[in-house]
Amino acid sequence: VEFILGLPKAELHAHLNGCVGMEVLFELADEFVEGIGFEQVPPNSNDIGEFFKVFGVIYGLVSTREALGRVTRGVLGGFIGRECEYLELRTTPRRLGRSSLEEYLETVLDEVERYPKEKAGLIVSVDRRMPVATESESESEEGITVEEVVNLAIEMKKQGRRVVGVDVCGDPRSGDMELLKPFMGKVREVGLGLTVHIAEIPGSVSGDTQHLLSFTPDRIGHGTFLSEKEKEIVLERRIPVEVCLSSNIICKTVPDLASHHIRYYLERDHPIVLCTDDTLPFRTSLTAEYALLLAKPPFGLGLSREEVRRVAEWSLEYIFVPAFILSDLFI
Ligand code: 5GP
Image 1 (cartoon, rainbow, N blue to C red):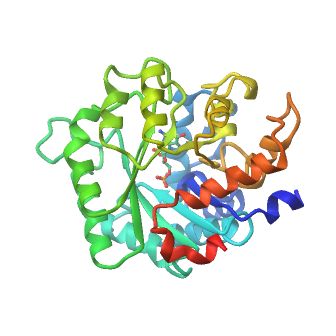
Image 2 (tube, rainbow, N blue to C red; image 1 turned 135 degrees about the horizontal axis):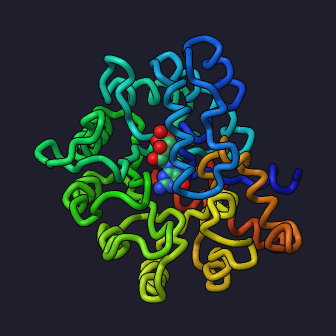
C-alpha cells in the first residue's frame, strides 16, 4: 500500500454523486429526508440496469445546495492529497428545488476552486437520457437538455470558472448519440476536454459507438465492447482509455480480471487511466484499484511495480488541463 500511496497519480473518472461518503449520506438522511430508506437501494445491485436506480436514492438525499456543497467538499477531501495529486471530478447538473442548473454548477465549482488548479478541475456531464434541445419531442422529467448543459459548461469556462471538460454518461441503453454531434463540436471549439462513456454494454444501439468516436474525444470511458475495428481507431489515435476495474466486475460487464480489456491495451503500451468511477456503490478507492493491478492473479493482474508506475504516469499525462499549467506534477 505504501508503494501505491507514494506514486504520484490523478483520478480522472469519478462521478460526484457516485463517490459520496456513506457517513455524509446517513447524516443527510437523518437531517432532511422523510420516507427515503436505504432499503430502497437494490440490495445486491450487480447489474448495469439495476445500477442506475442507486442514483435516484442518492439524489433524494443530495437535494439542497447546502447538501451538494457538503458532499462535494467530502469527495474532494477524500481524494486530493490522500489518494491522488490531481482530481478531475465530474457531475451532471440538476435542478435542486428552485435553484437553477447554473447554481448547481456554481455550488460544486465553489468547492473545487478552494483547491489550486494543479489539484482539481470539473468535468460537466451530459446524461444520455437528456433530450438534445428544447424543441425535441421527448422532454426529460426535469426538462434539462444537452444544449442547455453544454452551453452552460462553455459559458462558465468563459467566465473563468474551473470547468475543464465535458463528459457523456448515463444509461448506455438510452439516447441517440448522432444528435449530440453539433454540441460536442462546440465543446471542442472552445478548448474544453471531451470524454465519452463508450461501448459499456454489448451490442449497444447500432452506430452509437461510431458516432461517439466521431466526436474525436480526448479520452474514452470503459470501451468494454469496442469491436476490433473500433479498437484500431482508438490505438491509431492513441485515445487514452479510462479503466474502472471494480465497476466493470460488479456491473458484470466483464466476467473477471483475467479477461478484462485492460490487458489488450497494456500489451500494446496504449495509455490507460485507472479510475474508480463510483466509490460508493462499488465500495472501492483509487488505492484499491491500483492494488488490483499489483496483486497476483486471480486476485489481481500481477503487474510489476514498473508497470504500475507507468499507469500512474499516464494518469497525469492525460489530464485535460494543459501540461505546462501543471508542471509541478511532472517533476
Ligand atoms: P452525478 O453526475 O450525478 O454527480 O453522478 C451520478 C451519475 O453519473 C449517474 O446518474 C449516471 O448518470 C452517471 N454514471 C455514474 N456511473 C456511471 C457508469 O458507470 N456508466 C455511465 N454510463 N454513467 C454513470
